[in-house]
Length: 512
Ligand SMILES: Nc1nc2c(c(=O)[nH]1)N[C@H]1C(S)=C(S)[C@@H](COP(=O)(O)O)O[C@H]1N2
Ligand SMILES: [Mo]
Image (cartoon, rainbow, N blue to C red):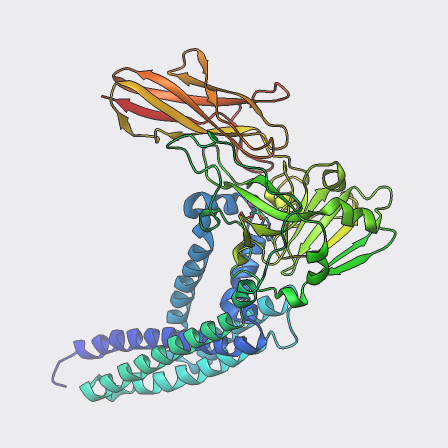
């Protein structure tokens, strides 16, 4: 043998790399083919999204918290990319194992298919054929893996010709997989409701919306009204549910005298009002940006609930989304006269798909996870003692009013300014109670009262400013707010779980 004793071992390493590549290529084929089949069976039946969905539904509160802290509103992209990397590593291993024994390949792909099918058929509203994308993808993967291994593992595969043939095979498989996957995604998105949304003509509110007073905006602070495209987004949906208004219905049932169902057309006939409400996520850290203020157009939910007639003891109104997500709101909060709205418009536009199109709830004063169901289709009157909504068994409180908080937006933490007057500014919120006072403290000195900007109502955040006579050196600034009941936000730091972060926001600034 011309290359001496080293050759067989050298060749074995090369061939196991080939086997690994064959495994990865066949996994890609499985995913691509599954995406194509899922065009017919529903996008959530493709294994990647199905498994991702199960992961999202089962992460413990601290892990979810960590995901949001590290990846922010990109937590879902991170999840998908992470899953793809894990899957590629697994498929590489399956390829190598299959090179030794084909049965290992079938078993490895079978295990993958088992997990995919289990995830797909247990999703909320899974169709009769939810198993099909995974099974079709897996069957194709077994065949592709077999073919590629045939090409790649023949002893004569070390010849240039065979190596080229093998790489060409891998290239073709990967190319077809990506093309199939992309075509699948494209066709699925054509079923999307973007077009239906474009055709929605929102009814007018009975009165003009409350004007934003001049002076509500402090220069350098986050916009008082958050544009739709910048509004924070938090939900468990890996891709936003596509709900066609022409088939949308809301059913109000459970502990009621008379269950009612209304359609989109009927909803549009109801009296509409427009209100600014500042929505906040319970996962928002002190100083964080999972909070936004918008002008919501909707009909008061109280009237609809009263028509259904809640029975005594029905202290919880469980809202359910098309994807099965639930949140529980105290029935009282929907009927006590605050502007709890069944919402169809956001800042003058139909709700963006990611923000709940066509219909969502907005309730002033409660964190989103207990009040703001997007893609809503159901309200079930029940008791808190009888039903735990989505986040409750995952470690979050059943009841969660928004905690009074304040944030410094300018100067930025860690920035440098010149000595002299420095304009300090930010936002403070105590939804449905209102902000009465904001104070700023420099280097642990006395608390100084900030100037409050004008605001639309107690249901929105309020901006503030403070003229700081800054001297050279490193400084630490803190802020605290007091609500209109005279209660000052607690200095005790708390993490988001179980019912919202607390503590005073602090920043460091260098003057010089
Ligand atoms: N269907 C559905 N609605 C949902 C959620 C969800 O996961 N699914 N998340 C809630 C949470 S935790 C928050 S903070 C708000 C966020 O609303 P936004 O994404 O429009 O800002 O939506 C709420 N409504
Ligand atoms: Mo949230």
